[in-house]
Length: 550
Image (cartoon, rainbow, N blue to C red):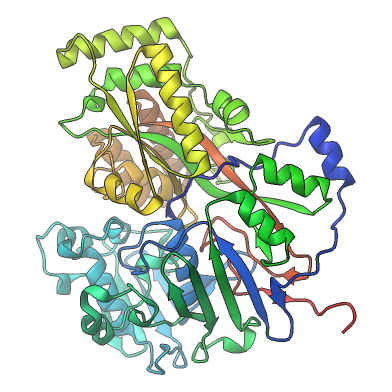
């Protein structure tokens, strides 16, 4: 799902001792809330931040992804159980050399006009056009000529996708792509109506009126920095199965305690991303605590551009050798339980016969200070310096981001004598600085865009613009290519294991943790999808139970 915000609750709960006892004693509790209204079919929520980019062609972050997952729809979509089902496409056929999609004739835009195959052709051509600079362009590279178009060697009109008629889309693949159907549910492959896009120009996606919607909801209000509202789309083809009329988000605050207080005061129906303090309060009040893995892996990424000291492998290895992810998660983050990780791949993704991380355990750093200092000495020799210059650490200004940055600053100073200068930025600005390479180290997170290990593995391919540190390795690119083209499960899993090895040996990143989410949900609000794929949280299938006295 692209780049994530930091949160102070770092991973899914590991419940032991007192926490287990408290969870066992919890009851569902009772809350009478203004955060939902059965008669008007309205729910009210709080977000940590407003969406930075609602242009699906260029959007990369999870906050925007959550909104887009409600107001837009691709050829395929995820149902309430997380299965791929028909979206704009009512049927399809995937072949080794391509795919054909037959579109619903009742799929419409929010202005009442039909969604056509040409709307997909235009959107996908825009995504690979070099001047558009979509950081997700590489996700379309399985399509014939996509990479050549993106590299400026072919015209966008030569992309291997065409509208046979208004309701038939033909896609040509230059090699087999077993995960292609999953790509069609991802935001970069959503349709865009060319006439509207052209008329809005640079304003496209900037405000509620600057978007045309084909999803279950429309963005009915957007007061920047203050509130967002999504209303049921009367033109949506499946509108009869959408229960909610309004998703109102009148509060935008990064403070987890403030969100918890809004829930406690019956102003919102959900309080997400509880920190240790708000979680303890919820437990005392015997609220029903819910958890789930959201798919995000957090890590330190190194800038490997030529003008950065972090291009030096021995410096990266020195940092890798002294970092202890267990200390960060259990002692620093302060969550009641979490999952440290030593790999880019999450524990719930399948390998050949079992979960990948069980089949292929990641190599762990030795936490050897003497070895780390030898790496550091070698780095200074290769860089031709006696003392390393100050190193810039880019991080979110969220509570979790601040706490982690302070820990890294102190730890690297004490262990290696490095001067770490923390550059704390709001989420949107942190993304911008990552894109322009204004960092030495950056604390970042990545979640899945589709249900395949490749959604993580190709992040550090040299052609991937989401590779913000610009790591480049012919060997890495080779194994990504193997995973992209192969239909053999064993061969693909072996490729992912090789990529995991390279990430460790080259210290491409230092994995931090695999995140879970801890939240409370009004007991009468049902059908909310908390998930790793398709945007989180998702209310397309949500409904409110009637009050007991009705």
